[in-house]
Image (cartoon, rainbow, N blue to C red; front, side):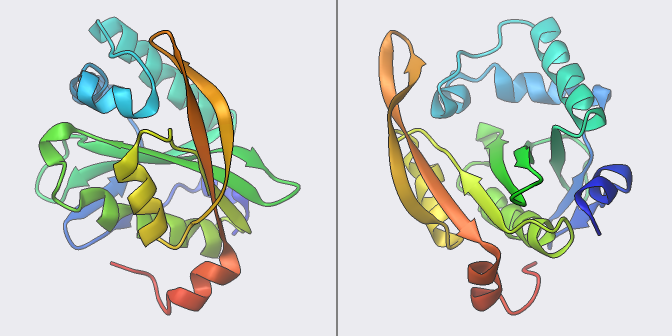
Length: 194
C-alpha cells in the first residue's frame, strides 16, 4: 500500500478494547470535551477551546487536511461505544523521505487506563507496514512528561531539543524531537501489537 492508498482506502484498526476509526463531523461534541479541558491542552501548549463552534472549525479543518492528504486521523472509541475519547494522527508528511510526525490526545476521563499505550502501537505498525513510512517523529513539549515516557516505551529515541521553540502563556518552552525507524520497530515488534 502507498501513502495515497492509505488516504483513499482508510483502514479501521482494532485493539483488544478499542476501535480506531476515521474522524467524522459528528465528533464535534466529543472533541469539545477534550479540547475545552485545560489539563489536556496544556500538554501541547494550546489554550483550551472556548466554544463548540471553535471545535467544529477544528474538526472541519482536520477533514479538509485528510482530503488534501496533509493528515490522517484515527479516532479512539471503546468497542461498545462510538463516542470519541481521543485521537492519533500522522501529519507533516515528507513523501520524498518517507517520514511523518505522530500526534495524539486523550480525554482526561480516560487517562491512566493505558488507552494511548494500546492504540499507538497498532497505528505505528500500520504506518510502517502499510503506509511505507521509514521514519516517524514525535515532538512533545519538554513539559509533557507522559508523552515523553510513552514515546520511549514505544522505542522512539530522543534525538534532540528545539530550544525555546514553543511560545505558550508568555513563556518559551523547549520542544523535544523523538525518532523511530522502521528497522527499529521491526526488530522489537515481531507482529502487530494488539
